[in-house]
Image 1 (cartoon, helix red, strand yellow):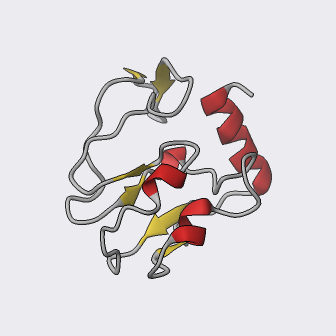
Image 2 (spheres, rainbow, N blue to C red):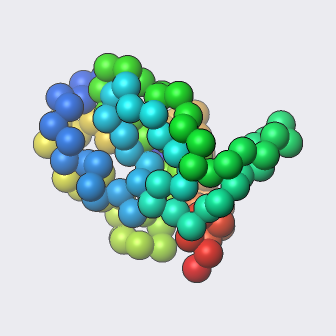
Image 3 (cartoon, rainbow, N blue to C red):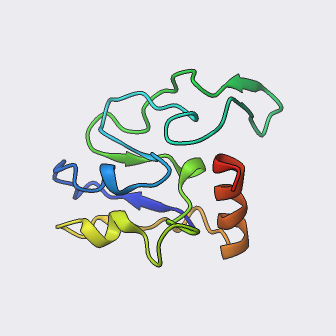
Length: 115
């Protein structure tokens, strides 16, 4: 599963630099597929192909957020999600709406980083 940041977030920013996939962004900041990855273009589920450096709309305007499609729970990098490990208010939690197996998370990591 992916990790999500709850609305208890105090916007301290401790989680952002810990993410090996650059999946965490400050509220209101646009995100890209390319940030922190080797991706040049991405085919979306609807078949649309987008330039990986094209800016995407923020998931939240109020607090830090995690892009689910980029979150691997640090699989292939660390033993546990680093955002949750450093969060001082424990607001980086499992996202019940996005469950993935370890194999799926590893495949996502390989897709983004080519490793």
